[in-house]
Image (cartoon, rainbow, N blue to C red; front, side, top):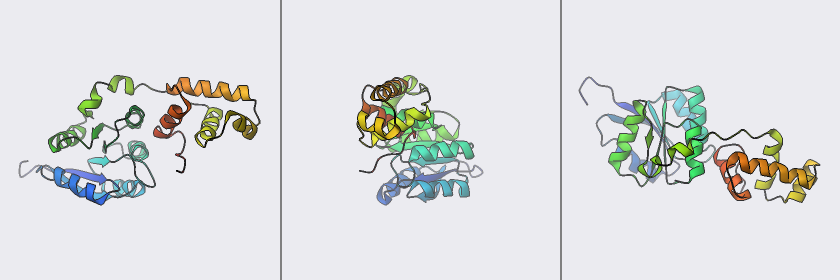
Length: 214
């Protein structure tokens, strides 16, 4: 970095302080990167993005109060100039797809070497897509746009996520078992899911329904 250049300003969000400290050390080993704020949950990440207007927000997926995917979607809608890089341990297709559809500019796994993370931050800052090598080959299919679910389909899926049987869903919504089956079949098709569990997992990852309490 030349004396006159401006460092890339980074917001780092992860709910584990030790992990944040390690990531910060990796990032700031590069002279052109500077962490200007840290958040330990999704709500704090949104507040700090609004307050600091960083060049790049580096977000974990699983955080209290708001997931990294929810923060990414909010940031792209309200602060489009802020680049978004997801840094996570999850390489499951639904999470990757949800992050990309939420507008994340990059997706890197925590197993990446420091040089790869630094390069990803620089790429996102330059407006490039930064994908982990393990994910890059699947990116084309992962960015496939899912057909939106209707309000009734979302209601059915939300009840299914809470463990309701088809019969219980039909009683709750005052519709027939057959109608419930039809709605679930449409949901599976729209989310490209083969099972109820897979449909629920993808819907949660996409932010379509709220995660259920353990």
